[in-house]
Length: 312
Image (tube, rainbow, N blue to C red; front, side, top):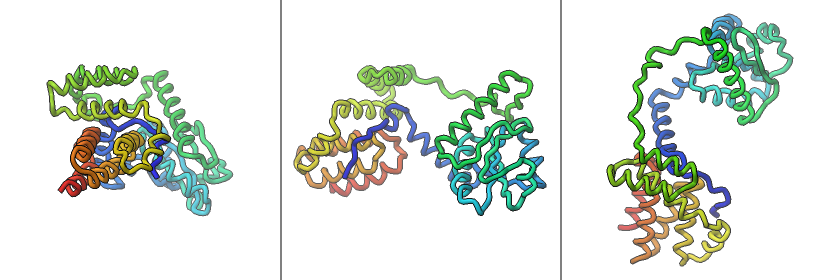
C-alpha cells in the first residue's frame, strides 16, 4: 500500500537539477572505477608508514585515524561509516585505518584502551576523537566540527594554509545563470510558486529546450497540485478504482516523496485500463511527470517503454 505521509522535495523543483547532478556524479564514479575515489582519501597504515601517512600528512590535511580490530564487532559497524563520511569530503580529509592487532605499537603509543577508537590528527597532534560506535549522523556532525575548527585555524594562520592544487584557482567560471532561472529559484525560496512558474515560462518562451526550466516548471506545477491534498483522504479514495483523479493525485504525492518508479507505474496502470478522454488525461499527466526529471534519468527510459506498451 502506498504511503503518502512523508512528502518531501521533488528533484528539480526545490533543488534544481539535484537528481541530474547526482546521476552525473554517479557516472563519473563508475567511469573512474570503484576504488578511484576511495584511494585518494583512505589509506591503510602500519607502524612503518605511520609517520608518513599520518603525522606528515596531518601537517596540511586533517587525518581521521580509525583504530580498529577484526575481533571487535564495533569496528565492523563504524569503519564503513567513517569511509563514507570522509570520502564525501572529496579529499579535504584523509582516513587512516590502523589494525591494532597487526600494529600494536601504534595503539600503545596513542594509549588506546578499547577499539574502535577514532582520533583526529592535525598539525601532528591528536585534537579530538571518540571511542564508541556512533550513528552516521553523529559522525558527520563530529567531522563537520573538526573541519570547521581546521578552517578557523587557517583563517587565523593564513600562511599555514597549503597551496591550491594546480589549476584549482584558475578553473574557468561557468556561464552566468539566466536571470529568469535565478528569479524562479528566489521565488521558490520565498514560497511564491506562481512567480516561480511565471519565471520558468518566460525562460521557456525564449529557450524552449532549457531543461532546468522545464524541470522547474513541472516541479512547481506538481507542488501546486498537491499543496492542499490530504494524504489520508487520497488513500481512502484509492479504494475506488474508478476514481481516476485520486490515482493521479496519488502519483503526484509519490513523486514528491521520491518514489518515482511507483508514480510512473501507477499512472501507466491507469492508462492500461481506461480509454477515450480518461486515457488521454492519464497519458498527458504522465508526460507532465516525465518533465520533472532530467532527460537521461534511467527511470524515464523504462517508463516510456511501459507507456508505449500500454498504448499500443
